[in-house]
Image 1 (cartoon, rainbow, N blue to C red):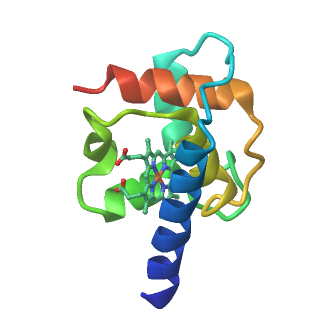
Image 2: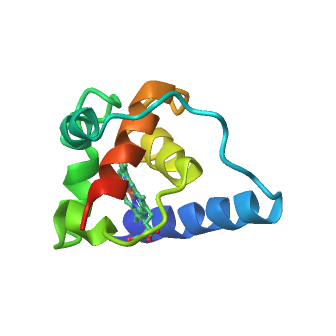
Length: 105
Ligand code: HEC
């Protein structure tokens, strides 16, 4: 459990740093929600064997835990680079994930 606490703390620190530096959304390609839904459960987005679903499901609410949240691309990049140990520069994947999360109700 300690590791996950550390992870949450570093993620929050990274988010704060991004906010303070005035990080704005980069220009992403057009996203596709259906592809994003597949990506959300895709363990090949990273190399750790996890998918977005692994964690957002373990938190008990699945992708629905993200309903109404502002899906900033830098948060998704942090989640890809951190727990998924993947390349945070996968622009099309990020655009699709954003489209999917925005489509949730
Ligand atoms: C190791 C577990 C883990 C994995 C895997 C993971 N996340 Fe996260 N994610 C977190 C934690 C922890 C937070 C911050 C706490 C929260 O918002 O619930 C977070 C926050 C977020 C947020 C912001 C939610 C908010 O409150 O505004 C989004 C959006 C998000 N993740 C999307 C994703 C996507 C997309 C993926 C897959 C590429 C992913 N996450 C993979 C743990 C994870």
